[in-house]
Amino acid sequence: MTRLAAALVLLLGVLYFALPLYGMTEFSLRMRRGVYSLDAYRVVLADPQFQETFAYSAFMALVTIVVGVVLVVPTAYWVRLYLPRLRPVVEFITLLPLVIPPIVIVFGYIRLYNTSSFLPLTGSSSGTTLLLLFGYTVLALPYMYRAVDTGLRAIDVRTLTEAAQSLGAGWITIMGRIILPNVLVAVLSGAFLTFAIVMGEFVMAALLNRPAFGPYLQLTGANKAYEPAALAVIAFAITWASMGLIQLVTRFQKFARAER
Amino acid sequence: MTADLEIARLEKSFGATRVVRDFNLAIAKGEFVSLLGPSGCGKTTVLRIVAGFETATAGTVGIGGQDVTGLRPNQRNVGMVFQAYALFPNLTVAQNVGFGLRVKGVPRAEIRARVAEMLELIGLADLGGRYPFQLSGGQQQRVALARALAPRPRVLLLDEPLSALDAKIRVALRNEIRAIQRALGITTIFVTHDQEEALSISDRIVVMNGGMAEQVGTPFEVYNRPATRFVATFVGSLNTFEARAEDPAAGRVSLAGVSLRLAGPLAARPGDPVGLALRPEQLYLGRGPGHEVVLPARIEEVAFLGSVIRLRVSAAGARLALDTFNRSDSPPPPVGSTAEVSFSARDMIVLGA
Image 1: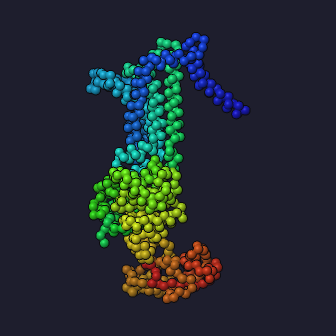
Image 2 (image 1 turned 90 degrees about the vertical axis):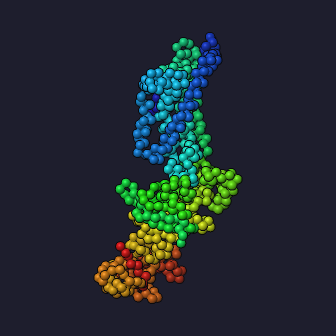
Image 3 (image 1 turned 30 degrees about the vertical axis):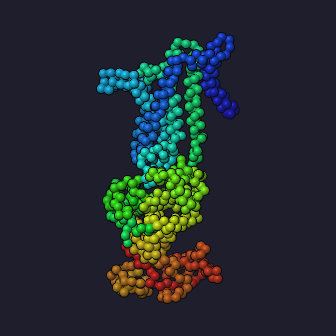
């Protein structure tokens, strides 16, 4: 009886998630009357605005990942090695973006960096893009920090650092040749999550008026019928591909089975 | 003796706790010195100060005549082997061994040759392509040793390198470490809490307690002529006695009403209590040649350990440990039987403060 109930609950859960997806995908294939076709996808992919916004967001995602890695890996490493007592504080700070809505962050930015402020970043297109990059880095912080910190937990950071130091290595060598390769899987997990988040982000990009994929999704959704469904399927595929890649890199790490 | 490694007036405090106090040690080139002591005695801290991982509160560390106290760990050119192996999991055995050379910017061909030489030395010549997780504990520690030695460090520091290994490998590897150290003639500090390990492979032993060096001497000296009560009790096992000084200048004491003459004069006044000790192997089952003290005893326990038989006997109101060599023609006495035990007062150790 309990097994049956469990199966029933599972079925309901699967339906809850799968039905809208199915409906959306099915609808995206019905642009041509009476037959299933990929016309909606063809139209969307051929749209120059799609290409532009997609490229812009992908580029922003990659830069966000780089900035995030450069910021988070040394910080998490340093905190673990020398400031273990500050770990709860740093963890709290990195979790703040989950609590503070992006709209608050972006309004804060606009207020601080508007054209009449001491640092008028919103006055130029590149300045605004930079602000957006900061915003994305903040959004990605909880995922990146958690992932890297978990990766660091799996290795004996202190002893490995000391071993490298006694062999003559400086900080750059230690970070680049020992720490980063050993937390690479964790960093990649954080990176793919970041990619997925940035690709779908709407609020910051819209309010900073940047030509990103999120606002384009919204714009298309407001004006067309079949294309938004196709776009949603594409966005969903990106997210799932990112998740799949996380699984893949974890499995293919050569030394992943190391007894740590 | 010209010191290759010189530690002078070393002090280290963590907050209000002084973990190393007035520690002085001069080690000659090629010497193998062990820091021996219970956990928390400051031995690892001394080693970490020499490596540069801890900063001394006061005092200096000199290597090869150069004061390295202010140098960072990566500037000191010391090789270190850790208890937890600390091999880089993302690098192969060969890359691990060649790491220090690569950091130094040594040409590739030279690195390859040196790595091959080191792997040959530790007997793992054909495992260069493996990753650390594919090796046993003993193999990992050998690789760690090769990695520490590859850049030709001035000093080799071993931080309890055998503690994580099982007994048989521990003995084999400690002999191997000593043989390699001798062959290379590298000045070495070995930290351990295992007295047998320290006694078996060291040129000299520093017995540490409460952050201080209680005694520095050869294994023979430390074992047979312990300078303090702590050294006597920490290194080896002991039977202890309380005696009274009779004629201190002549080394004469009274023990349970019997007057004994010790090997040397005593620093005590007549009538003062004197702590005496006797190693189990100095107590003889039967009447030993030249033994002036003979006591009737009762055998309480017999432990057959192979080459040695350890007996517990009660004699003169005390329970004493007695070690005797195994001989195939004389089985150990049965428990409960009576026997005589004897010893020479000259073998007794005077326990200091």
